[in-house]
Length: 99
Image (tube, one colour):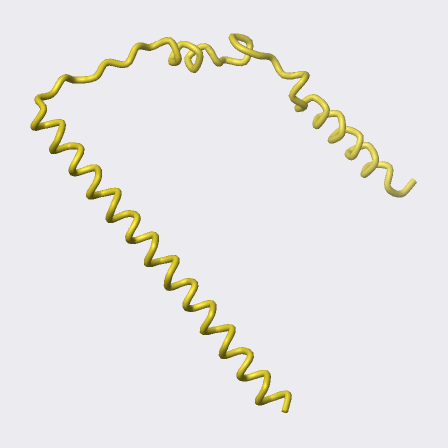
């Protein structure tokens, strides 16, 4: 019988995949999620700061966000201009070749 081993292997893999389905998996402590569930119960504490420190941190964050936005805008602009240039070059070449 040719293919008998392949069929047995296929059936074994189908059975393994069924066991991996979400409905058959354990949840919570059975699955080892106790540390992740306990993490959600932690209380977060923040340090207090003077108004000058808060303003300094706020200004720093605003300037970093502005630099990041400008960088993203430049990348978008260069990609757009590059795409338009490539499209125009391709249309020019196709007119020359096509005749």
